[in-house]
Image (cartoon, rainbow over all chains, first blue to last red; front, side, top):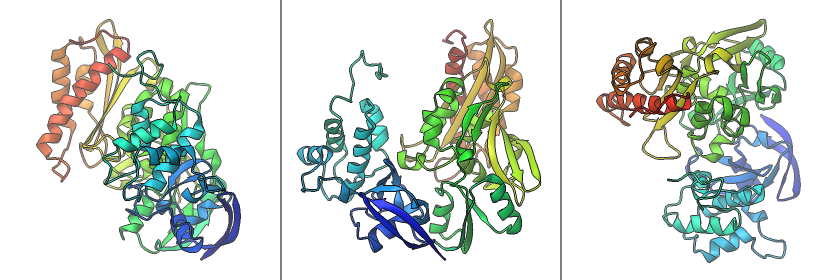
Amino acid sequence: MFKRIAFTVNGKAYNFEVDVRESLLDVLRSHLGFTGAKQGCGVGECGACSVLIDGVPYDTCIYLAVWADGKDIKTIEGVAEKNGELSDVQKAFVEEGAVQCGFCTPGLVLTTTALKESGKDYTREELKRELSGHLCRCTGYQSILKAAEKSLEGHVCTCVDSPHYKGK
Amino acid sequence: MYDIKGYFDAETVSEATALLADNPNLKLIAGGTDVLIKMHGGQLEDAELLSLRKIKSLENIHVAEDGTIIIGAMATFSMIFHNPILKDLIPILTEAAISMGGPQIRNIATIGGNVCNGATSADSASSLFALNAQLRLQDKNGERVVPIREFYLGPGKVALNPGEILTEILIGPKDYQGFGGQYIKFAMREAMDIATLGVAVVCKVQSGNFEEVRIGLGVAGPTPLRCLEAEEYAKGKKITSETLAEIGKLAVKSAKARTSWRASKEYREHLVEELTQRALKIAVVNAGGAEVV
């Protein structure tokens, strides 16, 4: 069974028939070549397949392709500038050494990008919570957290007089 | 690829109930975080799916004129957590919502799906039990309202008749106004984990006594459950650590904990006794009572 859907990926419009059995990850990787989205666990736990759909992170392994109809999708391939210059979030990940094997990196960069674009302020604890849908087996997360904090400079607060302060 | 034989989209509830009446084999799909996982694991084959994702009216969260809180079944856990009305009126539900899965799962998983999946570990369930939630079920011919306690029949089994769709979750004003509450999820990790035990309590306090207490437990039995014996005991009792200790003991009586690979029966019963008291201590303060020392 096929259904015709229209959506954009990284600003480019697509319109074609998808098999209703396919996940968005299948379509992005196998049909469109956006292999930056990774197949990890396949059950929505590891976050390697996460992309931004209308600016919000979703796991595409458990997102049916037909649901992408009318959506605006951003994958890791669409994060850097057109001239190849890395985004601020990508630069922060490089500078903090938050990339080792790289399998979790696309998802983490995209989620961090969504947090940055939200314009909201986050505490360190809230940042950890927002990144908790991405498993990394290399770094131990410290460098990733530092990279996220660097990406959100000016929007991370741990000081006692912050309205976000929840510690003792 | 998922083992999907047919796929249908409904744009309105009446369209969905009509499709469902025509083909009772249709499997409802909301966020898909349970249905697709089951397919992935081979527990659901040759599925004909009826997606509710396009029914935007079911995402609505609001308070009716009589004070009843109405949560559309397609509201996601992220919507629930970020909803200022729910955060203000029934924080035990928003806290349960943020404890579920991880951000990407919360962005798509719905409260209606969580309830209809029938799992005792459903993170919303203990809070909905403590809040005496009612469920509005609709089919082609009309609708009925069922208390959540009568909805859970057994592991993965709910009282959804063929042709019915859960449309709304209702919490009446007498069930939340004047109450203080607390939710505790006990799990091995702080994110992306299934609860070893979920405890939600609400209480009303009157001059140092419990006026009313309701205790909802998840993963303490084959379905989420209420601790009616403990609740009955608490009525009118002076709020002391001795009263709390007795409530904890009585809560264990209502539990039907079992041993699973996550935890032993004995450990779960210990958690019921201890966490019920811890949750109540905080709930008392949230209800305007004095701290129990």
